[in-house]
Image (tube, rainbow, N blue to C red; front, side):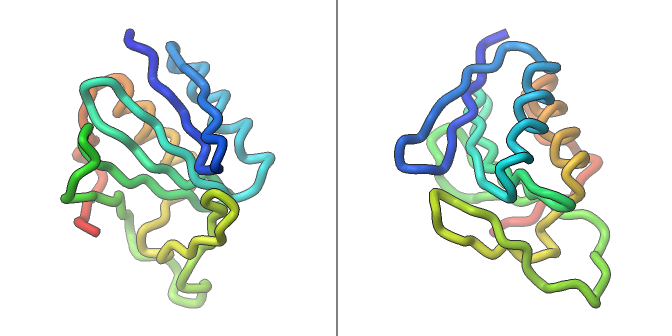
Length: 131
């Protein structure tokens, strides 16, 4: 398997290379201890996933290898209307609100990322909308 890169959204853009599925799961779960944050996952010859790592929600956005539109975001069943309409993620030190409708439970985010790692395509069991 070609290694994928996990790149932080901070200016120094720390990189971690991942070669195994379980290693990917462990790194994503480990990132939770830093609070809600944004990281990039570069998959050689498959594209880039921008993910929100957080609890209880995260998000997944897809862009192709050259990072050109359309950008797709995973969406799930509508969330409870009484919740705050946004979830805030730290993107390079900037608080970034993501609409709750574009957020998923964190374990679902991990599931999507692992599916993409295995299959080199977006899962069709999740709805994808252009943003």
